[in-house]
Length: 430
Image: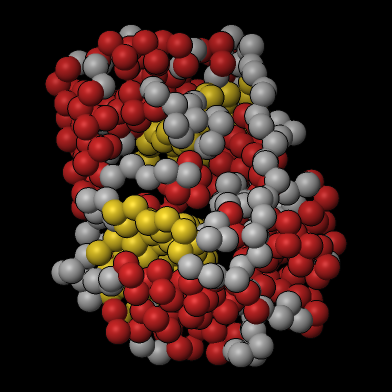
């Protein structure tokens, strides 16, 4: 089986194997490391509710042994033994298996990841041992109020849609998932067309493709099912409170955002930087420096394939929660009424500069190209992103934020010891 098509770009090369697996490499001659990311285009939003967390469970199980490497130590040992890092992560829309190794161990790293994904045994005894481990992981997340706020925010925004469910599932679903269900899920959701192999380091693309062909060339062809689209909407503010005996109130003010490929995403991203990214952002200067209400306050713009969200998070003293929530909402309203050209230019420089700094790390580069390919089936080089940022006019930012960040669509999530008061509900016009 031979490679079907190859594209050579300024900072990366891309080959599609004849079975549909995409192979991307970015040569970094100055590096002494090689990073390999194998992306699978399936995550928690591909799951049925009854098997919630199955993508995450599978991610755990591929570390438990293959026919060639029967023990977990046979998986991690060779990588850690040369100073490398081996890990994986499950998200809403993809799963990523990755390693970062000294350059001379690149081939061994790719071989290991291929073996894990293709030949894991899924031994029943290991499945039973891993159940309580995953449940402990879910418990750890639930014990951290700032993570719990994130979970509740997703539930409030996405409701019964799979995006609203915890990526790792629930105690009940994790206890019920079977070996057969895992293997069936992989058969359906891990076809060749869903796989992206992304490599960064001082490696030759031809050699990467040669190895990928050898290790992945006979991977089963096919197309995985499309995830459920989000079609929900909101017409009035919402508030959700979860009682915790904590020192702080953790809160989130959330609104719907934009999809990853939306024409206005960079306008929203630049607004996000002005509002809440870094110690010179409006939120930090107002909420922390001027009012002294929070140690940590920031905003974030998250993009999925067909939807997105815009969130402000903060941790405050319970007695200050009303004042903090009102100040955050006021700052959102003030910012959307108009940012300055100086602020916009500063946001452009910050966004471009941080992106360039990340690109010095081989893992960040492999992740950058692979994540774009698996989510959008195309790749944008960093220089192109910089051009897109520079093209954003201040009028576009004002238009986008006035349309999206409307107070009648606010969602407030609170985790802590103080129940929302009547005044706090009044702030949201409830």
